[in-house]
Length: 279
Image (cartoon, rainbow, N blue to C red; front, side, top):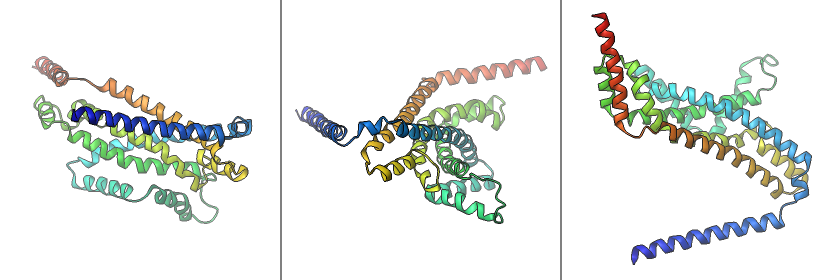
């Protein structure tokens, strides 16, 4: 009876929450949104341009941050003290300071290192945004990769080394594929956060989605209508990325350690065969 009561109470709370949020959304959409303004070509066109710009920034930033994050994660587990400490310092700095601060340093600080008029970039906002997002999120990806590697049983490395693999080969062929699977959910969540972090780029004059919202709200004094566009566009990106991450997780779910053992056995057999040929 107690378990059933808790279950029914949870269902009642969830249903009440859904009704409250649904009712609020219906009220806002029916009374606060100007649909003629919402569908106007001018508004739609400005949001479309901002949406495409955000997509480009996210695509480049995601590829660069994951690539750099893998290197940072490998640096965190390096047997070299110098490499390990540098990687740790990188992670501590970019996780310990706000992204907004980092964007300000890159956007305002770096151009001041050149003499007036000598800075090579005329439009520095978008490159600064990509650099800031890449450096910031590479720290989080690096920690996800480090955690994924730590979650791989030590026996995997020992088995690979016993088959004659070097440490680098064992990492590449055995450990990293498993670490990637372990870290994929955390990396996917971080990349979705990267999408939402693009909303901060309005402070460095990047004409992204929130910047368009601010301009329209200032001109029309109507926050709810452009907010509908903001919500739809961000959800379009984040939900698509969620589906992509889910698909990658399904593809990388090998299901059983026996398959990895078979992989090791196959590598070992090929190594034996090579050894036999040499003999």
